[in-house]
Length: 246
Image (tube, rainbow, N blue to C red):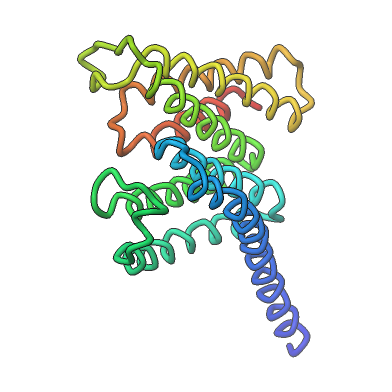
């Protein structure tokens, strides 16, 4: 009985180590990234929307790296979920500081904390579905990277160069064909590279999966309200990848 209790204790201890390891991977990645990004923010005249997307790139790249290095889905999901719970109250406090507005450009009061909450809730949901239910950690990471890269491309191309708006009763009229094309191409290329590295399936299968995921993600981004595409786009992409069997 004592041996069984000891083994039970060790299993919990091992799991805590895995969660701490996930936090460590994210922490090191974020610290290194911010060390590189902060001089860009304060020493250059980079547009605010560009810096916002650089921060988004740090978030989705860090989570994807953490997923690929995590030993099981529970540790990865709990890490992401805890970050969602911790970041919201922390940002609620520091957003009142004068320097917060200089570092983070908000579209509206409280927008950053709401955006970060949705972001990490989405990460947690994707991990739970793709890895927890279907045992596809690669699809979870791929969907996040495809969405993140495509979303960044849509903004970086669409905001300065988007002259032709997508006019439809299903869209808000703010998104452009240029931005949507950039999103599809970047999402497709990232998906193609990422899935090729993660899977040994036929290249035609990978090509088709990346194409379908990119198309579905771009279409979902077009018809989703801007405040919710953080949730809808990666979830649609991961469903497509899972259905495609990669």
